[in-house]
Image (spheres, rainbow, N blue to C red):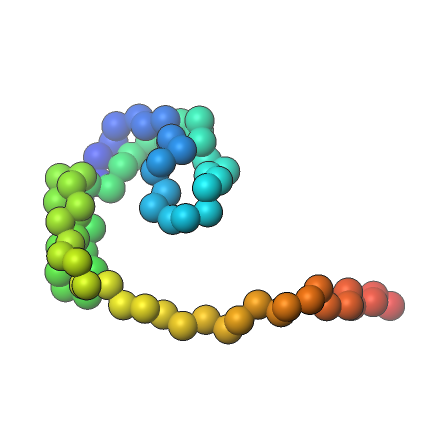
Length: 74
């Protein structure tokens, strides 16, 4: 069950390699303390506990190499 504590979101709270977090400085109420993935607990009491290799790669389509022509309205 999540907590009801108030948290100020920080720059390192998203785990990605984008280098930008639009939520930095925003105060939120509630924070996940336990997370389950496919029947396995991967966060316990706010600590990441997943074993290396437990994730799954999800393919996505390649982005266009060049910008596409905008669609015309009307």
